[in-house]
Image 1 (cartoon, rainbow, N blue to C red):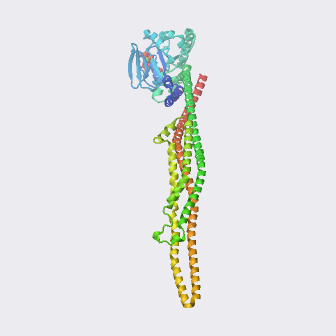
Image 2 (image 1 turned 135 degrees about the vertical axis):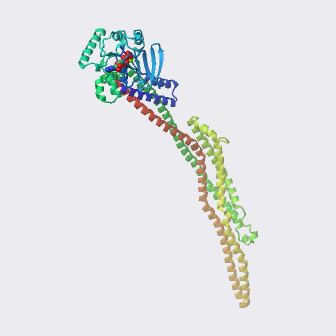
Image 3 (image 1 turned 180 degrees about the vertical axis):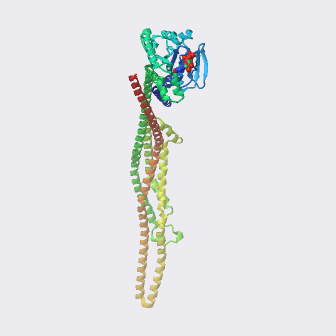
Amino acid sequence: MIGEAYFDLRERLGKDLFLLAQVVREHGGTADDVQILENLVAGLNDPFVFVVVGEVNVGKSTFLNALFGAEFSRTGVMPTTDKIYFFKHGPVVQSTPIAPTVEEVRVPCDFLKNFHIVDTPGTNSIEGEHQQITEKFVPAADLVVFVFSALNPWGASAWQFLDKVHRQWMRHVIFVLQQCDLRTPEELQVITDYMRQLCQQRFGREFPLFPVSAKKAFLARSSGIDRERLMAESGYEALEGHINQVVTQQPARLGKLGASVRLARQVLDQIMERTTATLDLIRKGRALIDEMQGEREVQVERTKGKFQLAVEASDFDFREAASRIVALADEGLTPKAAFKLKAEDTRIPKNLDHKLYQDLLASAGERWQQMAHILEDDFKRFENYMAHHWRGELYLGDLKAHEENEPASQEARRRFTAKVDSTLRRFVLGLKIDESLEPGLLRTRTQARRLPVVAGVLGLLAVVAGLLFGWQMGLGALAVASMIGLVMYALLGRALRNTRDHLVEHFEQARPSLTQMLQEQVRDETENAFGLFTRILQPSREDLELQETRIHQQLAKLFELKQSLQKLAQELQAGSASA
Ligand SMILES: Nc1nc2c(ncn2[C@@H]2O[C@H](COP(=O)(O)OP(=O)(O)OP(=O)(O)O)[C@@H](O)[C@H]2O)c(=O)[nH]1
Ligand SMILES: [Mg+2]
């Protein structure tokens, strides 16, 4: 195909420009940028204009058909081309007169997308239109092909026509000596030599001259029989080589491509700069969130640390409260009370747990209220820190959503107090004080009940012994009975002390669990309160990560485009250098 390298380059550039326009639109580029790129794309597709002139019947139309391998222009032995035909691409064949002597013809031939062809009637038949052709079409032409017939290249009208072509446009002129198959090589040599000589004489210059046989070239292109020989004999290879060069290395066209590439690279560089700046901002945002997350963790530890002393003090409070409960139990744990009937057993006041809880709350409660205020203050401070760093963006909006009913800091304080209270209650209930005292109380009551019975039986035995074996024996037995009674009484006392000791030990054993429960509760509550910030920060961070991935993908695309444009620029530079 004629000008393949050029059209390939142009097509690639067109694709890149199209992609770039898309990218500019996606990146919210200015309408001007998009417009510039669209104009560039449209401008790139400026077709090459070839104008063919020559005398009647010299084979102009046949030459064109053979050149493009398609029979788009009518040919014939009689004068056929009666008007100036301006061939362009169109989906269907359609002919439209655009002037009395000019017809625009649309033909669905692909090459017409890149070439506009002006086929003209014989110069000897249209004297009046010469001026129109030379003024309108020749200046717009990339190539002006003068066709001569090898049978008679000396017809005056073509040479006269050439006289009318302005010097400036002569550089686009080439000579084609047609119908060469009707002449011997020797004759052709004589003719071409003389034509060159004539050119020198009339115009002081030569024009590239190509002896061809369009008939053979067309046959080679259409029939497929003996194609290579026909093509070689047609002389079209040299002609096409020249036209190729005209198309591929036309400085103005190359300049246009070069300018388009330069502009596209500038626009792309700006977009890349902007995208990189956005990426930078996103990365900064992410780093800021990470920093805040880090700070949040430090703050959580700091706040938790402040509660450690309160946990220790609560242990002390519990010991105090427990000893008061033991003292209360002491009052009931007397031998005298143990002798009462089960129904009357009021030795130990009921609801010791409740008493202990109240006592504990009275001493520890206020302390934990203060701790809750500390939590609130720390929370508020961190909130301010975050708001300050976030510069009032996402964060505040989200925080408001959390603060519909009450400020989050207040809610954290309220919750903290409630949770600690509930921990104290759970702990005290878990002690099951009544249950721990019950076995001891039962045992001492049984022992107390046995004591009078045993004392009575032993006393009776002593009396019987006195009666049977004399008063000395009786006294002795009484002494033994008293001893046994005393021992039993002592045992009862010990059992009561054991019960008390058991309670003390029970409290002592429970102490670490209070510390642990409080520690866990305080830790959970602090983390839960400050967890709000994670719940706010995390989605923002994920969103930024998503954006970052998207921008990376965009940058990869932009980079690919950059490389493609760079390659085009290099190829163009190489093309210009060889032009
Ligand atoms: N032998 C031979 N005949 C040719 C060649 N090219 C064209 N012809 C014949 O020459 C005659 C004229 O061809 P056209 O292509 O119609 O010539 P034209 O210059 O377009 O004619 P007009 O448009 O009427 O001025 C036709 O009969 C063609 O078959 C060629 O290379 N060799
Ligand atoms: Mg013709």
